[in-house]
Structure formats: C-alpha cells, structure tokens
Image 1: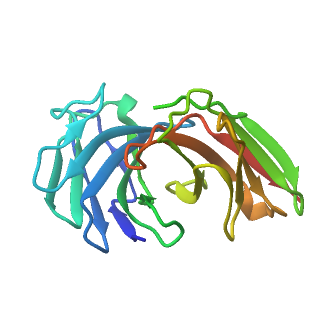
Image 2 (image 1 turned 30 degrees about the vertical axis):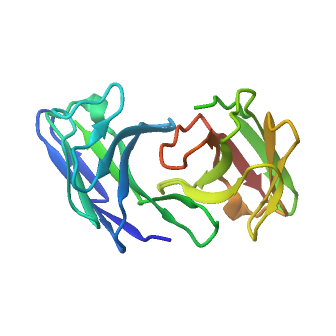
Image 3 (image 1 turned 120 degrees about the vertical axis):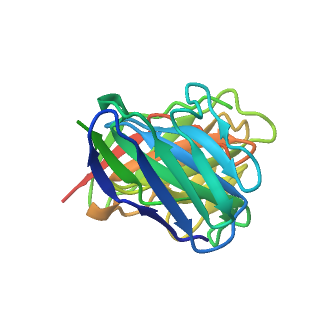
Length: 118
Length: 109
C-alpha cells in the first residue's frame, strides 16, 4: 500500500494566476497519475507522470495548462496555469502499486486539493 | 475501456445489506472488475477486485456471473459510515482508470 499526501489541501486563487500542487508518496512508485474532479462530478484523468519521462496527457488536457514535474519516484507536482473559474475542482494524485488488499497492483489516491478560482 | 452502467443512487438503512449491480456488456477477456469507494472530501479507496465467480474480503463481496457482463458489489450490514459514492471500473490494467458517474449510497439510521 501507499500513503499519499498533497499540499495544499485547499486554496482560493484569483483568475489569471497559477497554483502548484504537490504530491508526496511514502514509498517509491513508478506510475503516478493526476485526476480532476469537478463539483458533483466523477474523476477525470488528466495525465500520467512517470519518473524519467515526459508526462502523458489525456484528451482535452495540455502541458501548457497543466505542466507536471516528476523529479523522483516519491514526488510529483501539477501546476494549474492561468486559472479561470472553470478550473475550480478537486485535484487528486494517485499511484499504482502493490496493495495489501489484493494480490494485484491497484491505485491509491491522495486526499485531494480543493481549488476555488474567483 | 469497457463502458459501465450502475444506478445513480441507492438508499438503505443501518444493518441492511446493500447490493449494487454494475452492467459491463462489452467486457473484454483480459478485463478485471474493480470497485472503489469515495467519501466526501477524500480520494477514492480500493474496495475489491475480481475476474470471475465470487471474491470476498473484510469489507465486501463481489459476485460475477459466468458471462461477466455484470457484477454485483455486496456490502453486508451497512452502517452510517458506509454512506459514499461507489464506482465500478472495468479494464485490463488498473493503472488507467476511467471513472463513471458512480452510485451514491445513502445509509440512514
């Protein structure tokens, strides 16, 4: 299993500014992911961030808007750039690793960062 | 990824068994069925995963018929703390998850 922390837990930002969200894992993991959950909605995968390679973005998400860093196997950042009110969401990171609950690998999620853009 | 369909919401009372059925008609041979639980203001949490027949752990049971076109998550004797959104996901690899709308389960006293 993995314990994941995110900073900040929540923030209120002004339109046009940028926010960097940090994700820290208590063990080394290869695969890390960033999701967005808009109010009242389900989760949408933004990108896959593997250490040593460029992040892979899903349709509808671009690097200029959501730059990602993955400097090592326990840490990643997601930046939400040039924010608008439509970016108000919960942003979650997750890792794919071996779990205690199953003999197969599965995903563990962080607590999320609640972002409000005014 | 196979598309899943599950009820939008379910209501129950404490002590009852809750069964959530998920339809996945286009499930592929190599696909697993995985269920996640999400409490308000938290990230999703893995509950159970299965491929066929029945899987049980300390939290829930997962029933999968022979044709694998559906699956049922069973939560025994729910309590108020089981109020959450439950997501059914189907895929070959657990590392690229496609979340549907989920089922909001509300447990009342």
